[in-house]
Length: 206
Image (cartoon, rainbow, N blue to C red):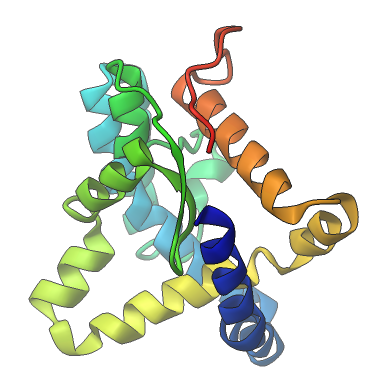
């Protein structure tokens, strides 16, 4: 089933998402694209802070909070990433990692329609992520009429950022499905263990 959904996602990406991302890259000047990415990255520091606190990483939580405050003010609502320029490290945390930190097993590998690689733990984490996502909360509850525009812009900006790396993936992978699966599981394992995973695997592959 995973392979079938993977094939479906590949078709949708080739005929819809990739052309839109290429058009976005062509139409939007690089400085504007960078600014858009910075704004969404800045908003992401809010759920990152929440998950740092839930993982008892208080120093990282302080850093992420400071990043958000600095970029939201001195960085003009996040348009400019001032925080990185002054040495405040960007962290990557989500509810899937938080559950992993507290001992929830990865579970079977899943490929979600449209969303791509995941696991039973991370799929549940995605739902919880929405509860702390400023873009989701703001655009769908505060101003629902702009929700699809904001969400679509973020998805397009994210997909455009992957255009360069996918050529390497296509050239390197003999079996693209297996390559993506293994890379995803390894990356998530490293994130849960902050780059220092134990030797024994805690994953269940399909």
